[in-house]
Image (cartoon, rainbow over all chains, first blue to last red; front, side, top):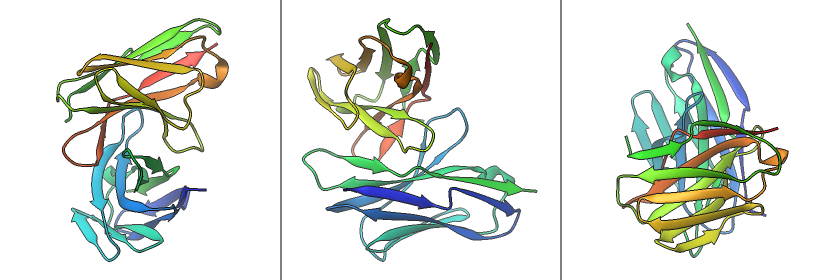
Length: 111
Length: 111
């Protein structure tokens, strides 16, 4: 069964305390992997797309990496405004752009 | 921001009544999607559309129907609302890339 999992479910960091979020997937064929940020009461906001193992993307304090079985979202020296739920999603090799989302990691950054 | 507007933003309805949610885009994109988001689950695809009058089912389509009579509008109808359809519903579009852009969501409560 195609599946995307994320860990931890929730993460609480002190401001400036770097950490990583994990996204693991078991799918029959991967075309790409997305990371989104979601603030309470809002729709997901696109962050990155990764297409192949070894690829890395960066944006401000965020860096996403991809291996054959998982992806990491590294957060360096986070600030309170980085608090949000981070979703990963896998784009599959199907006749249409089928995407499977993980359940998300809720990140809280404490001043 | 992608030009996606969902209406209504909040709705409370009674069990057994029909409900229609609207998604309107100003981007002229071909693909549109309806997702639902529930605690403990990732975003799950209900239906999608790949053109005017061209729609197909997603993974959780039972109890839902859709219509797309114009490029810019994608309607989601709950034929006879049930409590299990209480959820937050998101509309999304994909443009020239594979990443999706989401609306602000509709919070639906079925009592």
